Image 1: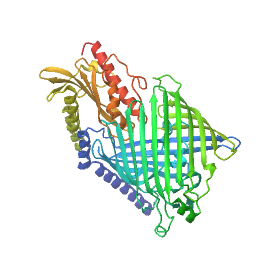
Image 2: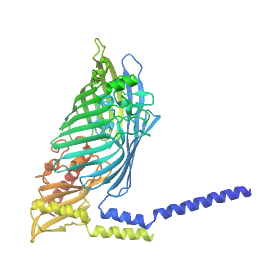
Image 3: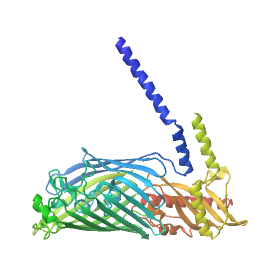
Image 4: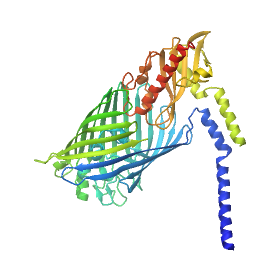
Length: 387
Length: 174
């Protein structure tokens, strides 16, 4: 009994002291002054930002069993320490049971035109890697160019600058990032997904050579937005093998993208081309099949079937994609696999039932360059939200 | 408790003294270049509470100003905040003496998404609009890919200011 009373009193005193401590930390002079400074700076002084996006898919290939998947569930958490200093993170659940950190960076706003940023960030390449929220693209699944050529969601740890110039309608980003790893446990680069297996995603990632990534966005023509991206560097190898021929490969990727909106009509497209050097040594060392060039593009048009001015939007769209992870293989000293040279038609509807909530349906025809390959059909349903 | 009251006093002081220095400097710069004057004064223009409460947007202190140079009315300025994806941005609209939009500017934008609305080229679309115009996103106001939320928000904000001016004109307050 005595013991019980003692332990209860310890718990109570613990709670009381905890409360006192929390009061002490919230009512410090320092914090109050910061609040006032925020007002002085004319900020809205919102501390915490909570948001997120989610995408739930149902894929039904012809002649095979379907797949239902809570594909992505991402929680955005941001904190604004001051008008200049902000932390942003996205915590992602993929396929319900895989947990990742998709972004986690600290941003310092130097002035209206320049931000300095470091941490786990998205590599700016093409459209979807950066604008990957399901309400921002048509089709249940992201375009496959943004899976096999641009390995979205492609993110690594790095540091860089970003900003815009309103007079010129120009946005820019330039970062030094950690690169792909040459070998990811038992997985190698190459095959149908090119560089995708090499993503380190900021998880105890190895670095021995920094990579450079940059993008320029121009939005000065009415309705049109153009992007030019570049990524240059080498893959990362572990200490014990980094001096062996083929331990790493050189990666140079360029991308061009365009988006256009005029009243109810919209269109977008992108072209991505990657050159891989020393792929021959890499393939010899690891018995891999990494091509010396990766290439892909797509073009998409859409038309909103609802009148302008309605809050809801019903986009009917059609997209053609071509992408090849063996676009060149001669320099890589491997045989070209024509099944990696793929093309796809995707057509369907995106019904935006409210800004930020979309229900999607589409049909895909998936084909490749293998002689007499039979085109496969796939029906997709899904919804996406972004808030 | 004491701290709380200090904060509220500080807060109300800033409200009374108008825009922050940083914001005011930006406003001054735009006014000078738009009206091509070196000196001017901005006088808050207010209306009765009963009228202001009917307006679709805020016209209380520190939102609507007369711009005066040598006792002559050059035009008007409207300053406020509008929501972006997860934050708010500050914007300025300058009108001539006949309340036709001369220019607009995003003064402070605080997040990544949608910063494109600061584009001078995009904001040009509002020039020449007056209370007789109705702005429709995607129709007479062009969209920007990757900035939908902020584009809609800015369009809505300007629309509400124009609507308010129309109501004030109908009541012969302007």
